[in-house]
Image (cartoon, rainbow, N blue to C red; front, side, top):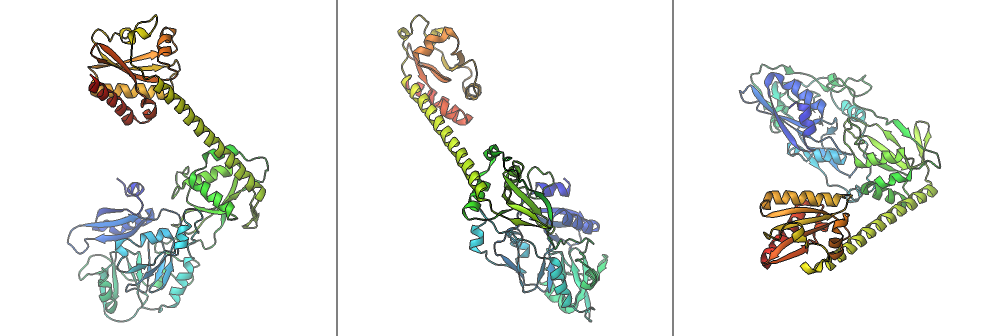
Length: 513
């Protein structure tokens, strides 16, 4: 399996281990970084084996919401850069989104990163009105860090250290850098503390030694942070990349409310009740094949936009953050230059609530009708629970004789059906055939009787049948015993439960023999 395919199959926040030969280490790390793996660490470098093991997590997917969590780096470096391109200065509490906080609880960070508790009020908001978290401009962090570092390396004896991760790179007080997967040259006084954090001192190596400083990697004249792979990953000013605004008063297709999922429904109702101007939804539309983190709410929201019920625009943020969409009711987002204005339309919101309530009433009535129908059916079946008598059916053979069961006293299941076979009827037939094949293919027969055939009118009248009905014919001595399996209509949606009702009918018949 290719490494990118492994990433797609891996669950969020789960780890994978990959082996590679030493000469392919750096190319594999770069590939894993580009794919989106985080907390990448290398095992086995200190051995003489030609093979190394890399462990990494899938942790970048998910919405960027604020829960008041901050993380603090406490290690020997003065700053670190993680795989989501977040800078963490030593000793400073750095706010992070909930998604990033989940990454920093991985055990690989346990010795050097402290994660604060979440804000309870912000956590409560996650379900209905989450507070979006926009990543800070990384350029500000870089400029602040650059101003505190000397322009040249410190003097003194140097040693070679191999840095195994989990950070992408470490910045030391003299401005020198340690890169993951590289043998790095550092001043001896820093090496002791770094070895306590998992760095390995290398006395004899054939690998190239990395000698670089922060100023080399991030020059003063760079407009944006020039990350080690040469790509600028900061978009410090979110831009409106798409705006879908519908101002037509008669264009709302209210039938689309039938597809409104519970999650977005609760958020929209909460938005109206609290007079919020808009909702922020993070994630990609599930219909987008290349979406980073599919969100059902975003997918349904986009359908309501196309139906003229809502409007939206999207912002693009830093790499690693999900698309952030602003959703409001139709006509409530208005363009204002490169930004938007918000204007609540109470009339349209009342219209929205009215259609939603009308839809809810329809659902309730349909449920009541279904319950009423099932009730009538069960009452009819209960009335029909009579013991079979040969003399009770006028001008027609008894059912056991008609089905050639009487001579050998054969047991049988009988399914009465209409010309037009409904889903319930077809499944009852299918489940019964499966049951008999597995358990009683030799000693129990199965028969179908068409209720719309005039030849069967007397059976329909005698048993008071009006819909699909499952019966069982068994024997007590010389007497045929017919019972309606009343559980069949209640269990037809579940094959295991339906077959259980058949088994119960057989067991009851055995107890009465």
